[in-house]
Image (cartoon, rainbow, N blue to C red; front, side, top):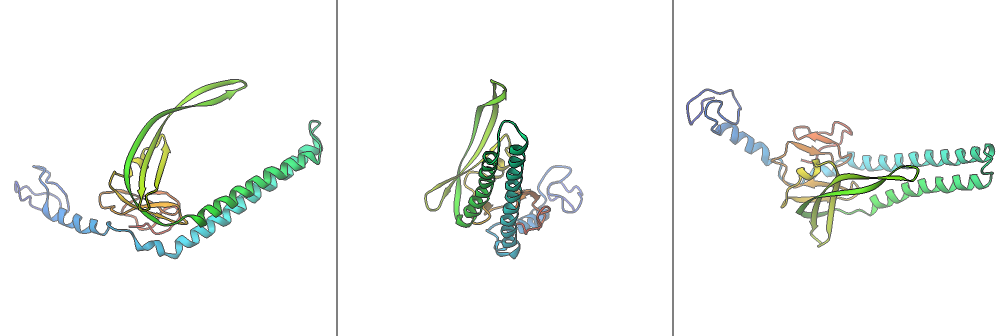
Length: 227
């Protein structure tokens, strides 16, 4: 491919001339055409794979909680039978209480998914905070732990504010820019960006796994990538 600026010959489909660094019009035109496909909220959200993912997530959540609950009940019962510090049925009651807590957590997670709604918004702010917290070191000793909190602030169309935060990880923070239009998908509790044309990565809206923008399906859960 000949450069229109200096006449040097470069490989096909390169974006910039290897000699003068000038933009190659054919490659830029092709990139622009491809990128247009990455603008807009994807209709792939209606794919049955997402409904299956939500259903399977709820089922595995209950299965995992049930296993933990059973382990707590059995463990405390055995402890009550063998320990000199606590007898049954007191130990068994504690096990039942802890087991019930695991089941309640799974139930509240399921209710939260069911109640979550789809809404649109705009990224209005990005914040970085240096923070610290007290950590137990064993016995009566404590130490201060330093960490960085990265926060993305989204203004919903209904006027409410939604925040996305992560500790010591700026991946999501760098993925969003102030002014980006976004859509929150109910049930999945995940965010989709309207304009993905400048991105090299894309998050799976089901499992949140980080994929290459060129991929069509998540390499982890195989759900369609919303682009």
